[in-house]
Image (cartoon, rainbow, N blue to C red; front, side, top):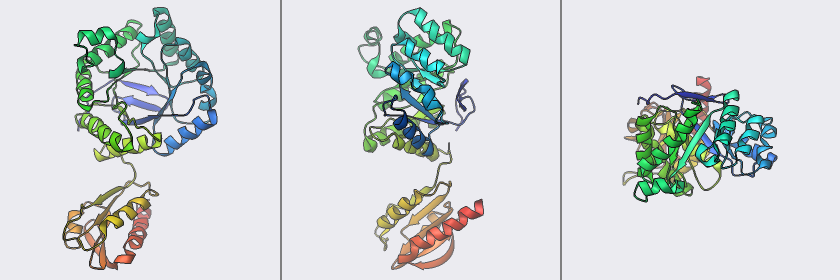
Amino acid sequence: MERKKTRSIQIGNIVVGGTAPISVQSMTNTKTDNISATVKQINALAAAGCDIVRLAIPDMAAAEAIDKIKDLVNTPLIADIHFDYRLALVCLERGIDALRLNPGNIGQVEYVEKVVKAAQKKRIPIRIGVNAGSLDKSLLAKHGGHPTPEAMVESALQHVAILESLNFNDIKISLKANDVPTTIAAYRLMSDAARYPLHLGITEAGTVNSGVIKSAVGIGALLAQGIGDTIRVSLTGDPVEEVKVGNEILKSLGLREYGPTLISCPTCGRCNIDLITLAHQVEDRLKQVHTPIKVAVMGCVVNGPGEAKEADIGIAGGMGQGILFRKGEIIRKVPEAELIAALFVELDKLIEERK
């Protein structure tokens, strides 16, 4: 799929937009001034494949912790600022890599100018983040009292105009709603209206169970249309899960190599093996594997290898025994009780060969 062309910005050592790979973001849920807890979570997110981490900066204690956190992590950090321009200035002084800040919420023009000048001096980008639930009342009234896609885009462009009037163009934009069709429509409108990089997400998507589905549908639909430069899956829970889901979304669209891919059939009346248990056991053991590789667990020894011939390696079972295969070619027959052990011995060989 061809991505829509956008400008590129630099967030720490990560390029966002242009021809750069689509990056995965998350946000810590620790108190930012609890430095040890925040650093621990940032490192856990990075280990899971997170490219950029955002931190809440609700007060001066959080802002003053930025340089101490930066000294202990390698991941680019974004400061999430609302209303108080002084928090942004302190974060900039202490080495933050980017700001999430809506200039219209800062208040007086002179305060916005101070932040913009400081950001320009350090070449720090600013993300304008529009949420459907917090649109200006006058915009809502103009658009029938509802947070329509058009209202969201108009809000974003108003903030963009403030920055552009100060000759600031290192801008990234997000337009998030908890409603998937509204979000998709807003991003599509914005992708036609401006060439700034877009940060995709479905806000307040829900728990891991429901939020994964909404995020995959919304973010995936936009990425499939070539829209989006960086993503965040917003879930109620451990932010590490957000990173895993984000990477899986990119992997499913061929936009990122990320760990193993499990291929397994849905089972049917021809299945003569406990495929569900097998698949779950394989999936659990694959959590320790980080190499991009396709692994198949199939329930039919007749059709399994053919149906999963694109898999790098796989097993198919039936009537107390199964077969081990590579790229659809059968290697050998294996007793059912030894299938998983045989699969991972062969998988280790395959990974070693690739090295």
